[in-house]
Length: 463
Ligand code: SF4
Image 1 (cartoon, rainbow, N blue to C red):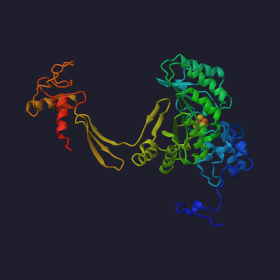
Image 2: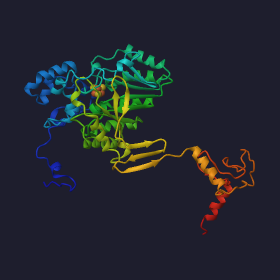
Image 3: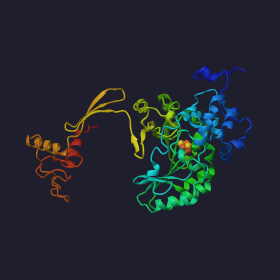
């Protein structure tokens, strides 16, 4: 049979000589649809040991001991779905790098911090971080569908659930702190809980009158999209206003399954914001980040933050220079839709909060002369003059009046000393016709609205 290749499809893509070693058919050929689409099956069948991983992807003989040692420090978890995104032929695969233990993690095991953001220092009760005045972080779970090797909260990742009594104390803290109007429910991953358990927590939070917004931080739409089932959707939409922060890092994660999961959440009225992390060897180039952002936009997921990787212990090899992040941001502004551009932030080590960084477009600013020198995305230079201020406008207006440029008028005949006490009837002029500056900053010259309208009518071409 003849194969028809559309003109627009590169031949290399249309007819690969050897099929890619990835996908469900490659890794899990005998798994049924029923199993594959069941999030609990996916969760139970996560790859958690080196022996299991080696059945799918070869581990060089010299790396076993180092990787074993790494896993004693920080567990591994890879859902079959997420593993299916790995290209087995690519030794630098960006998906595997995020979740598979590496030699670098062993080599750099002593660099970095256990708690790089000092979350424990801002914790009034276990599980709560109260760093910003009106919002708190609430860590309700110690487990995730996948374990990202660069995770900032490696220190809490155990499979034991957070005890209910601890969660109740977190809710109590929020209830007795009226300043808190926004909570980020995170972990671990809250969506790894069963729907009933999650609902019991959300319902308690929603009962707090001063709590306006509930946000959930979850990587499940990326790592276990099967979890976004109808039962979960039905439950979540009872607790609006509810937002979800997702965490896609690479275009290869933007699969039809992930898009479907996001679509379900969005149709339930839950806005989705993406928080990506800039990771060396995974997404630290403009083309990859652009592909990610454009793909997110197509899925209606708003690119929210691009994080500089935290100084987490064992994560040194993931960190890029700040210059690299700035270069990427420079390549975005003006070169793609503003809506697609996230804020590039560094989380202040030890608890400084998010600090935005980026290219400098304001080259010079002179507050005395009220001038700014700016550059645009093409490097062209522009001078912007700031408004002169109210005092200068009043002075100029009075000078114009004195010079006779502004003709004194008696104001409107019909509304002298109207209800607002101003002779000209518009609240801005004076009975002597002197020009003044109105609230809007425009110079009014003592003409009434009727006079201006009549002048405008006179200028209208006659039919
Ligand atoms: S899913 Fe999030 S919380 Fe869990 S390991 Fe990855 S980055 Fe950490």
